[in-house]
Image 1 (spheres, rainbow over the protein chains, first blue to last red):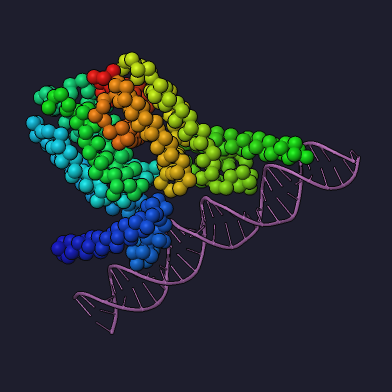
Image 2 (image 1 turned 135 degrees about the vertical axis):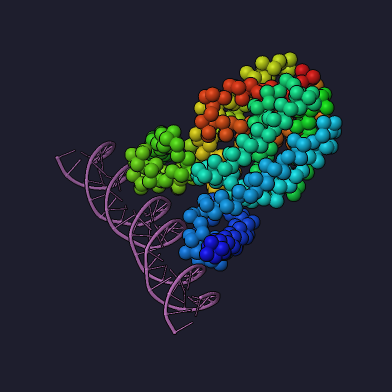
Length: 210
Length: 210
DNA sequence: TCCGTTGGTGGACAGAGTGTACGGACAGCG
DNA sequence: CGCTGTCCGTACACTCTGTCCACCAACGGA
């Protein structure tokens, strides 16, 4: 009896996952044609995903809940991929910092359409706003902790206000990535910008102390 | 005859300006209640401004052209208010940089609702996007020129790639201001963040050279 | 004063998109 | 075979946008 109930639940989840995957692919395809998620209508989505309107609303309350489902993983992955930066060894050199930024950079790159959709959703969707800003705050907190820790050990510039510095630097990274990828300039300038970012971060945080 | 024609033109412009002012006030009021410009409907706007729908469409093609008219001045003012930074004297000290940032900071603060509307409009409105990004690029270019000039004279860190550095720093400032003001945290944190921003900019650009 | 012109208004309406309800078709299971 | 669950398509009410147009008030000129 309970086993049967769990089986039904598992089946529903599998069906939802399948519908979500079809919609994910539809979103990616339509966005790759130049439309923003904001501009996409539910009609366009269901047609591209080849599901009926009724089915869409069986599994998702609205377009916002679809976006939440689509970006939750990407947001979490971005936060955790930044860990290589915080876990960089104490005796690291500038090239090590550059390498430690790549996981997060690549994570954003790989999910850049959804990340852009989330960024843009912050302006009209309270739930997306909450989730996205939570990601920003978690990243800034991790960076502030990294600064605090580095200052207590001696490899981070001790004159920095860790919280405020972490905020500014987080905003800089997040905005740069959004602008870079949403404007289709990553192919030509991505590596150059990543290197200059790494250089700036090194200069701000570590130069003279590491 | 031409004089008469010019009189009619002037009258129309005066009428348009009056309608635009009513709509500007409506926008500010509605946004101050927590709505984003994106979320505002033309219906809400005309009701708040106490004009008819037909009148709105006599003077504005759509909501986008209203926003363009509303933000053009604010965008131009922001760019020109940053000039105090570029024109800072060569022998300036950290506190001078802090002071030179205030005009732009205050300009953003005073127009923050419209600036937020423009930022958010970049995700669904090509014309707003073009204008807003032009503002960003003009600011980044002015900063890059400032860096180049400072490097040639010797008061800016010569190891910086001026173009890329200018881009990152512009994005940081722009994003910080948007997040600060759109999330209603400026009252508690504005001054602190401005000071930490100034400190970071000094450290990146001038420390050891000025 | 009268008349013509102008500008704003409100109402009507078509179209686009959203979200809901529901009947029909079909597959799977007991 | 009958029942159940799922997906589908259709219909529809609602909201909002943008357009059209008749009406009216105000104004200026003769």
